[in-house]
Amino acid sequence: MSKRLSLFVVLCSLLFASCNPEAPWTTKKVEISMKVETVSAGFVECSFATNKEAYYYIDITPMREGYDPMTQQKQFMSLALDSADIEYREWRSELLKKGEFNVAPFASHMLQYGPVDHFFTGLLPNTKYWIYAFAVNPETLKPAGRLNLISVTTTDESVVNVHFDYRVKGRWDYIYPVDSLGNINARFPYIASTIDSTLLHNKFPDISPQVFFMYWMLDLFISPEDADVLYGVKAVYNDGYNSWMDFEEGHTYYTAIGGFDGSFKQYTLYRFSWEGDSTELYFSEQQNIKDGQDW
Image (cartoon, rainbow, N blue to C red; front, side, top):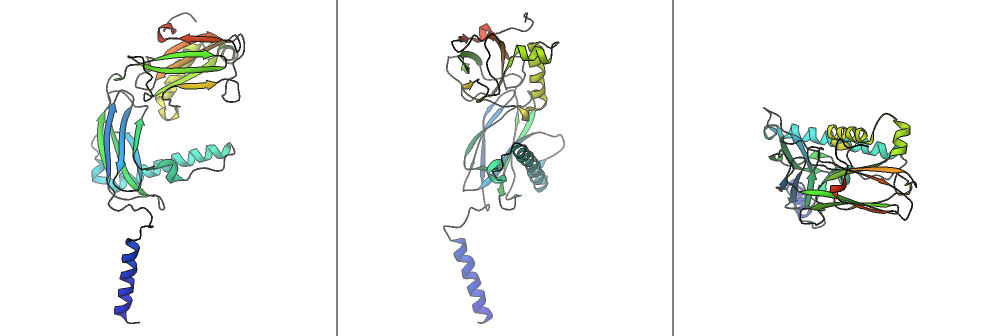
């Protein structure tokens, strides 16, 4: 075969490969659109979309004075993926400790695919952040394409008017984030936890529920990545099997609920005595325990 014919065969093979409709996704010429939907004191809602099928990474980070990621895109994107890889390995390690061996690969666990509406929570009020996105090759886990970057500044106070109603019915308890019109707000991030006062007193006899929750929320404020962020109505069956807690007759319980939107000073606290499966209680936010009230 002549050199000219060999070159022709190679060019044809490349041409047909590029036109193959069964070819895998590509990271070439991927455009990522980013649109900020809501900016509040402790969270930012942002929508993302791509012009073609592609894996991409999204995140948020505080702005650094004197540093411009756009002038050092490769370094910025590589460091972001390094950080994501550490988070992924820690997640896998925790699952392996629990005996869960079937874990999702990096691409499906850490990367986005297709349009997504994402909440970045646990942010600080009145703080400047960068939101960014870039295409990633899931086979090499390397950046592919350019960095997309926008800046936002969180507000001083929450821009969302939500309060929490709480209900206990038998072994079930329910949390309702409700707006000013009385409708369930399914998009507002919040955190919640319930403690048994008897167990708390036995383990920490000198710590009141008020102090316990104060430290709990402070820890989450320092390390927001550890928070179990909730949205919409939360329902838990407290039997010790489907949840970590087993309601016991005659015990007093405290439930704290706080909007994961900046300061935790707006958290709501409820106290109730569980009298068995016939227990049925409903609390509005106006019935919560205020700071400084006797415990």
